[in-house]
Length: 402
Image (cartoon, rainbow, N blue to C red; front, side, top):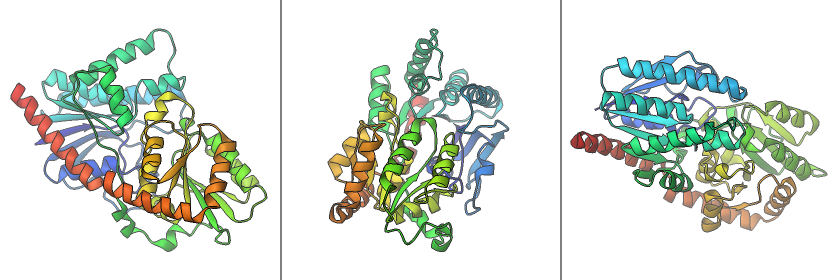
C-alpha cells in the first residue's frame, strides 16, 4: 500500500521535540511505501546525527517553508498557508496513493490532505494533535469577524469526511464527537519509548552543569511557547528557590518565551536554562529529575491537549505536577503518579513542589506508579501497531465502499 502523509512539522528524534511522528512513519515504512509531504523547517534544529532523516521505506518531499515558535501570528499563518498550497499541488500531481493521512497542527495541513483526498477519490485519516481552530481562537490569534464560525464549520466537515479521526487524548475525542457525531474516532496517545535511552551517553547529557551539589532537580522540558505559561512557571520557580540552596529548577527547550527564561537564569543561580537537546537526551533528563512540571495557561482548549512531556516523564518514572483541569489531572489522580494545581497560580505551584520535595516516600511511590501507568497505558510500540492496523483498515473499508 502507498500512504501519503501531509505533515508540516516533520522531525526526527535528533530534534528537541516529540518523536511520535517519526516513529509513526518509520513503523508504516516497514510494511508500506510512505511519502511524507513536509518542510525543511526542523532540519537545522538537529543536535545529533543518530537517526536517519528519512527512515527506510519513507520518501520525503520537503518544501522550503520556514516556521518557528517565536513567529508572530501573521508569520505563522503565512507559513501554514504556504505549506498547504504546495502540499495540495504536490498531492494532485503525485502518483495516486491508496490513502492520505493529514496531521493537524495546523488545521491547514489536514485540510490540504482532505481536499486532495476528495478530488482524487482516495480515503484519508485525520490525525488531531491539537484542537484547531479552538486553539488559535482561544489564544486570540483569530479575528472575531465571522471567521471563527467559518473555521468551526470547516473543522466539523473535515471530521465527517475522514475515514477515521485519530486523536491523542480522550478529551479531544469527546470534542470531535460533539462537533461531528457521525465521525469514526479513535484515541491513540503519543506514548513514549524508553528504549531510546540505550542511545544516550550519560556523561554527555550531564555535560552542562546541573549543580550536582543541589539535592533536588525540578525539570521543565518542552516548548517555551505562549500556551505553556512560562511566566507563571518562572514566578513559581523564583518563589521555590528563594532562600534555598538544595533545589535547582532546570528548563530545557526553545520558543517564544526563551528571552524570559534566559533573564531568569541570569538573575538566579538556582534557575538554569539548558540548551535544546535530542529526544533521547531529554528522556535522560527526565530520568534524572525528581519532579517534572507541566504548566499551561488557563484556556479551556488547553485542558484537552496531550503534552509529550507528560508521557515522557511518566515513562521514566518521574512524577508530574500538572495544571490542566482536564484528562491529565484525572489521570494523575486515578493512577497516583503526580499532583495538580490550578492553572496560572504560581504560589500554588511553588507550594505544591515544596510539599512534594519534602515527602520522599510519596514522591518515590508516585514515581513507581508513573512508570507502571506508562507501561500499561502509553506503550508506544502497542500504539503504533494499533495505528498501523487502523490505517490499513481505513484504506480497505473505504475501497470496499467505493
